[in-house]
Image (cartoon, rainbow, N blue to C red):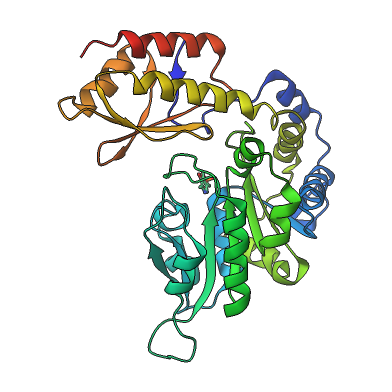
Length: 341
Ligand SMILES: *Cc1c(COP(=O)(O)O)cnc(C)c1O
């Protein structure tokens, strides 16, 4: 029994999801003739109350396409310093869109309307890059699964309206936020111009993300996806898994959150732990006491078939997910409690 807590992307399709994949009706999606993909896209568009949705092989590609749709080369976007679009998409912001990032020193990956407003370059001051887009992340990845207060998002929307900026949501883990905060997808659809959502994280599908937006901004989305190499053929085998995941794996995220909360609670009682960040969803971020070697800790867990990840600067991360069972949870909590320094 290997307990893999490095990420919620390590899940494998359940037997039922596998059945949905095998039974999928497929066609050529580059011709928009894949019925299952069309169904998934319509389902998500309806869910968020947005009129267009497009399937992408990865969340990074969906975000990169959104940035391309919102900006022109030389312009600037605003994001938190920990943003996935800035840190974990291979420099795609500059490579694909020729855009720079104004980074905000936010709180656990979240930024405020006030910080956004302060970071906008005056549009008539031609010496500085033209600010054209704000990217938010919910839940935040490097911020430990933290969730925005929706009222702050609405304030940020107002700032964007006032300064004529686009507003994109990197919603890779939006499902976790919706479940944790009991929020409605349609409320998100109302405030954001574009939203990317992942099917391959907590929902447990093998691959895929969907970019949502209104038809005006999404007009060139097919072309941008094609340029990025993301036009795919009989992709219904994957989007069938996405439909299955939306129907069956959203509500259960509460179980992942409960387990993460219990892990955070157990960790915070251990002498070898310096600090555990508050856990709101399925991610736990913690720091070892100064005298404990990070490398040794990870190695010792590995000897017990437990995998966790390090994010640098003494930051360790645990992510709960669909394949992390009750039995694994019990063993892991025991291991943490009995861990000898
Ligand atoms: C995982 C993730 C993505 C997308 O990652 P891919 O591996 O490209 O699918 C985007 N944003 C955040 C916050 C993520 O955690």
